[in-house]
Length: 217
Image (cartoon, rainbow, N blue to C red):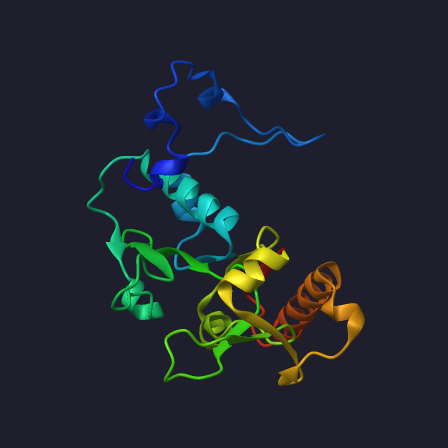
C-alpha cells in the first residue's frame, strides 16, 4: 500500500483470490534464485537504478520498492527526489517522478515520467495552454542532465503513441529542431520507431563515457 498507486494495488480491489501473489517468472534454461530485498541492496551497493518511461516503468519502480521493503514502512528509506529535481510543481497532481535511497547500502531507486522518451519543450512559456515541441530525435532533458549518476537505466514507451494522446497533450512532432515534414515519420508508428532508434542510439553513444552504466529497453 505504501508504494503502489491505488489503481494497481490488487489488495485494495476487494478481490478474494490472492493466488497470483505466488506467481514467479521462471527464465528458460536458467535457475533464478529467489529475490530477497537485502541481497538485492547488497548487490546494488553505491549504485543507482533509474526507470524512465510511462506507467509501465512506474509500475516496475513501485513493484521493486514493494519487493525490497516487503511493502512495509521502513526507516531505511530516504526521499532524495530533490537531488533529481523531482518535486511537485505548483498546481501539479504529482511530481515528475520519485527517488528513494537506502542509506545502509547507498542504493538509489528512482522513476522519471517520460511517456514518449522525447524531449518536450513548451512553444510559448507565457501561455499555460501552449503546444509543446515533441523532439523525436532528442532524449528527455532529465536523461541528459542525470545520466552520469546512473548505473542501471531501464527505458520504456508505447501506450501514449496514438493521435488521441498527442492531441490531448498538445504535442507537435519536431525533428532537427523544427516541425517534422517527413511523411514517414509523421505516421504514429514511424514516429515511435524513429524515437526509439534515436534514444537507443544516443544511449549507446554515452556508454563509452560511463563504463559502469548498463541500459535496457
